[in-house]
Length: 471
Image (cartoon, rainbow, N blue to C red; front, top):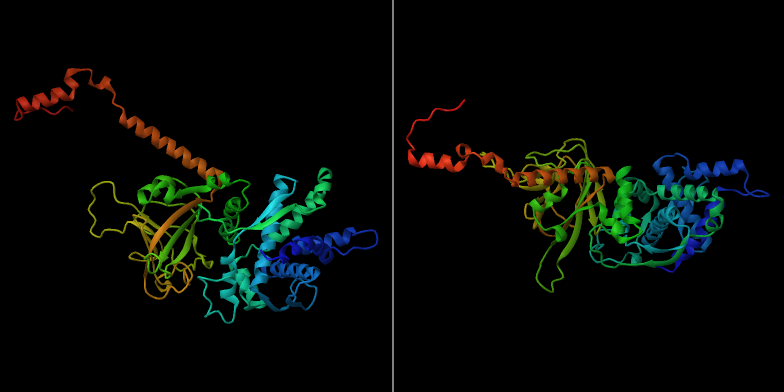
């Protein structure tokens, strides 16, 4: 973590007050307070909200005495901004937004100071760099230190990237201001709200057992809206590690690989889902440096169904690591998701349907296809897909289909407590039916005439005897 970040946090609160709440003699008047509150939390367009966030960051950096190449033509929220940002500036801005969201949730839980652990969000910074930098063709995103990048990001392109990729990023600031002002209204919280709730600050790159780390979960929450964003935020700001597993429906290393194991854990979940696939391409020999690991994801609105055709009403594809990008629906086709298991009975099929999970494309030419053993995933070029917007799902994808080895698959439920309770009730009902089918009612065989033994004896004694059918 750079030494300048704690300095930015120390100057954040005073910069917001000086920027929006102009004090007069005796304090801030009611008119100035309402005017400042509207500038912070009022309804405005996405571009104006992002402009306001950049203005807060620029004022905080200036108050901290740090360099920044941004200039604002006026004090209006929709004014023109000139200049550029460094990759380090983008990282500091994103960490400030994370800290503000973390502070809002900590105020709800406890008024005491808590230790702040900054997430690893290099995938978000690299997304901004690859989208905004004028010279990004020679950038090696597979082995890159974002703090050491010296590329300039024009602020106009950065605003475009922010509105397209992280549209809810300015909400971190508005929620922070609203929560802090609301906290001042409580007399018992006056002492606690007068100072920051941040204790010790640390940045960690520790290994996580889940693919959905806090940094990745936060990045996806900035893309989504509504209930899905709130549910995935529980993973970002969970007070303890066990709470994050409440939304985890399936993990291949925990529940076992394969479509059958997968289906037994996600069946009957009628709510939004997030599926993550971690895979690797390249030379897999020991000691090889050509192996490239990446993570892709898909967001579904209404869960999985066992069907032999594409289905779904909406969804999105995500390239998550090493660079995050989002591919929303185009509206041209509706081949959002395909999930098909082996038929339980002997059914004649003139053309056998592929068994596995797919997203986008067409039957046989899926944009993403995961085989039934969860051992390999096939990624095809976006030209065959009219459902989702074009773009590479991992760096240097190329035009030819790529077959990669799967290392992990995860599915997270984003439908809230109601969807999980409905799934649990379905599982209990199925377990009850299964238990009932295993039991044999001996009362039905109490009579010798109705027993299967007598039926077999009659058939053996005279199999050619003419028997009248009972009606």
